[in-house]
Amino acid sequence: MKHIDEDHLEVDLGYRFGYVAEFMGFGPDDVAAIHGAAPHLAPVVAPLVDAVYDKLHTYDATWRHFLPRQYGYDGDVPAGLDQLTPDHPQIAFRKQHLARYLTTLVTKPYDGKMLEYLDMVGKIHTPKAGSKDLDVPLVQMNALMGFVADALTATILGLGLPRDVEARTLRAFGKLLWVQNDLITRHFQTPTAA
Image 1 (cartoon, rainbow, N blue to C red):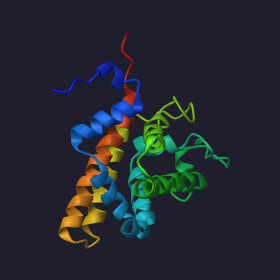
Image 2: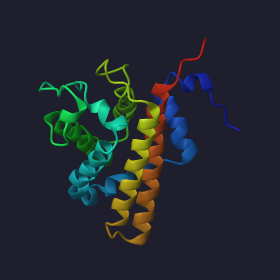
Image 3: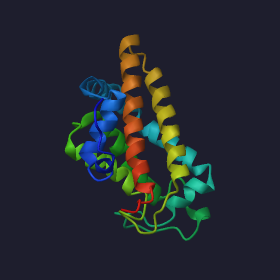
Image 4: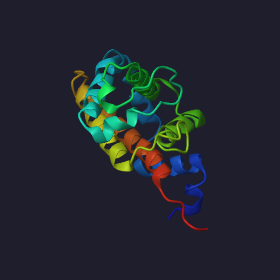
C-alpha cells in the first residue's frame, strides 16, 4: 500500500497532480492521445466555444458572472445584464480565453507550467485571483465542466476517428477533465483549521 501525505496534497500542486493522475491512470499515453487530437479539434474550437457561450447565455445564474469587468479586459462594461449580449466585446474577450484554454490542452506539454495553468483556471473563477468581483459558485463551475465534457465527447465522436483512436482520445480527455475539475474544486474548499 502506497502512503499518501494527505496534508501535502493541499499545499503542493505537483504532489496533488501526481497523486490524482496516478490514481486515475492519466499518463504519457493519455497526453499523446490528447496531443494527437489537436489537428482534428483545431477546426472545431470556434464552434465549440460558441456552443459553450450559447449555453451560458441561457441562464441568468451563469451569465451574470460575465457582467463584472473581467481581468485584463479594458473595454466598456455593460451597466446591466440586459445589455450584456452574446456579441458584446467583453464576451468576445472571454471567448478568446476559452479558445486559448482548449488549444493549450491539446498543444502544450504537461509539465509544471501546465499544472500551474490548470490550477489557475480554478483560481481565477474566485476572488483569489483576477477580479475581486468574480466569484462563480461551485455549482456553476460543475455545470460548465459537465457541459464542456459532453461537448468534447460529442465533438470527438463526430470526428470519424478509427475506433481505437477514438476510444483512447475519449478516455484521455475524460481523465484530463477530472484532473481539471479537481484543480477547480480545490479553490472552493474552506481551509481546515491547523
